Length: 388
Image 1 (tube, rainbow, N blue to C red):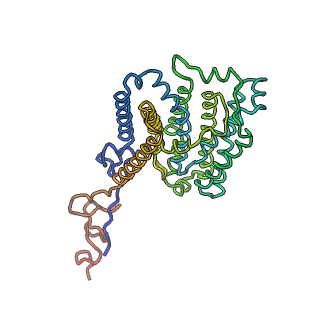
Image 2 (cartoon, rainbow, N blue to C red; image 1 turned 45 degrees about the vertical axis):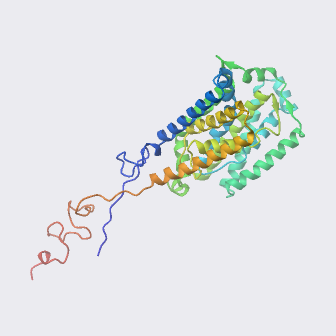
Image 3 (tube, rainbow, N blue to C red; image 1 turned 90 degrees about the vertical axis):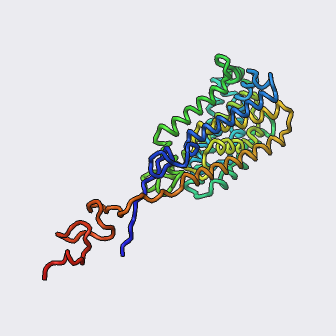
């Protein structure tokens, strides 16, 4: 006997519904619902801050302080979002920020900047970050080393190299033009915040409006299927880590402007903050799904939470516990939504089996009409046998 097979249509990528009718697991399973939940969480934190620290939390200076603190972590988190969507992880971002800041503030680099322009320091920081990211990508993509191990090794090596270059000393930025440009503001908005907005905007366009972004989702969702589709997975993986290194270089420039120093201690535990913000923003750690908007909201949530704790004179230990709880809840919610989106489609109602390609509707499944016989007749039926 032949079996009846019913083809299940692919899931609708926008609704999460298996039959594309918009009746999926719910609004919260889509990017809009997840981002809406993050906005609500951020508003709740703002209300708590306004109630517990009235007059101080809603002050304009305090709001700008939150945005300045979010800017550095946010820029690194944008690069981390691409890496995690692509199915990887980068534990070296904090060390790369330190190495970039130290290399860009050496006496030789600052002397070149004094002779030419402070833009030399900016290019140096970005080039160092991109070079380290390139090494990460080559080792992972072509050396077949697990991303966790490769970037963990880079974390140790980059931090150690930064200490050697700086001789464990803090290097002071001497160029006043550099400090005034990046430490200033435009129409009352700090330059660092504007840089964060520009990087986030560029990341959103790159992820959602370019072939590079579509390939990133494909590689993170199923690397083998992406390879069979013609995507050069190894080369794309290298570019993802280079992009992460570039964002580390930009973040190093921002830290140099904010602290007027280059130090091997810059970016300590920054990788954990970036990964936490990306996870809170709805990016799956297994890759294949994520949004820049969600990452930005995740950064703002963590920064606002820290500000509320600081204004209420609560310890950093309590803040760390709260962050851990939030991360666990976010991952559990991701798993629940992912399981809801993968629910099997219900069988179609109706009596007859599905018609096979080329057979008339209503023909019996498992058999084809004999030549000259009526639709649905099976070979061997009495009315389909030739006369003897």
